[in-house]
Length: 324
Image (cartoon, rainbow, N blue to C red; front, side):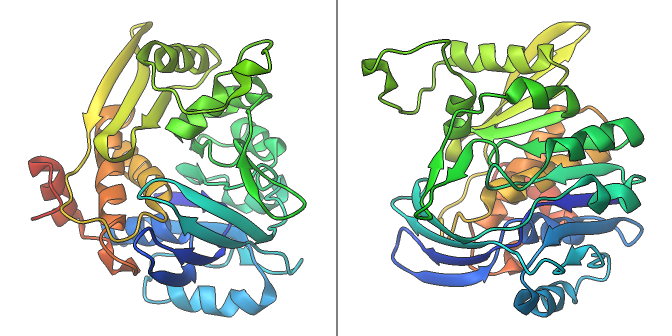
């Protein structure tokens, strides 16, 4: 088996909601290492990213202890990578600045990897993954495409400020996505009216179940096989079709006693989706359970040591708690 994970490996400068400062490489490092701990030696994990030249060696050294992670597709020819500053206001919300920008992942970057069983796309900003890349994979590979809506629902201004944006052209992307994952903020960026009054554009998060259901139905009608919307620490909603009928399920989170750092939880969740679908094809509930488990593990510390073995992860899912 091959799992290809595509997106930036930013140099993250993080101030947690408790005021602690953490500096580390983020984004696709989280699911790559989490999956490396879960899968057997016969499964290859392939991160695909463009990085600064100064970061290539340290990033590859970071992955060196994990023999099933293939770092050949982490490249620095353009000397363009991502640098992010994150200041958490509370456990789930943060202020973000982007100080450097990865050049986009293009079809030529994935051409050698078309035999992958899964492609996990984890863009964090709207320019990092070209739509042509998804089209190219869909046309030339049988691999399952898991796509995080974080990228197309976030943009960066000239001053480096990162802001949410409506994903206006989502219908151009949906036919090329098998599993679409997003959080509530991103879901709100996917639900928009044909026209607004000025008063209506007081942007905020909504959690109307009927709106989420409508979004799920819309994406499924455009070719997506499952839509999974995370609900912060509570769990996630899973939408999919069974015998032509839309199914809606709530999957409870894995309970944790203390949250140390939530950076990378969504990325880790996406990795869990890939593992769950590898374990049981089209079992989106099982996939969501593994997503919740890896997201919960990520909250438990500042290093990659938080990620657990398959045996411990299965136990967490069984008892619904991080304490095993």
